[in-house]
Length: 144
Ligand SMILES: CC(C)(COP(=O)(O)OP(=O)(O)OC[C@H]1O[C@@H](n2cnc3c(N)ncnc32)[C@H](O)[C@@H]1OP(=O)(O)O)[C@@H](O)C(=O)NCCC(=O)NCCS
Image 1: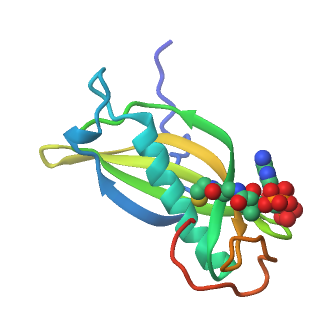
Image 2: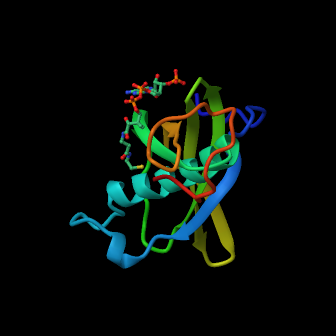
């Protein structure tokens, strides 16, 4: 049977749009797709911006506890990273980051979820020591 379930809800990006970036030919791996390390770096930056906002200051990535690569990213894709705070601890914030691409073919733009992961950030004082996330810290943008 080949019936498409048109009533199934379509997945949409989760969280706030934190950054958008074009994947360039310089970001390709030897197989011709975008290097996973470049995608991971964009996701870390996106999570860091959101963590910085919520921790009101400097943060550092302490762990990436989950990471899934669903689909390859191609040169010319617009990578859009969405960030959602899933846990606020004493000194840490866990941010679920989803990377979606906008892939244009003529006038048609496809929106595809390519990667997602859980990033843990720790709020830092100016000297790099950890601090309580509920207290405002030194104002520096992004992750350390
Ligand atoms: C961030 C840093 C100051 C934390 O210091 P620490 O003494 O190791 O901190 P702790 O072990 O007490 O952990 C701090 C918080 O992170 C969480 N954490 C630490 N390691 C974790 C891991 N592997 N997975 C999930 N959470 C983790 C802890 O649960 C704790 O959260 P809570 O306070 O909300 O309960 C220190 O690890 C550091 O400087 N790391 C290097 C950061 C860095 O350079 N990142 C790369 C560039 S951004």
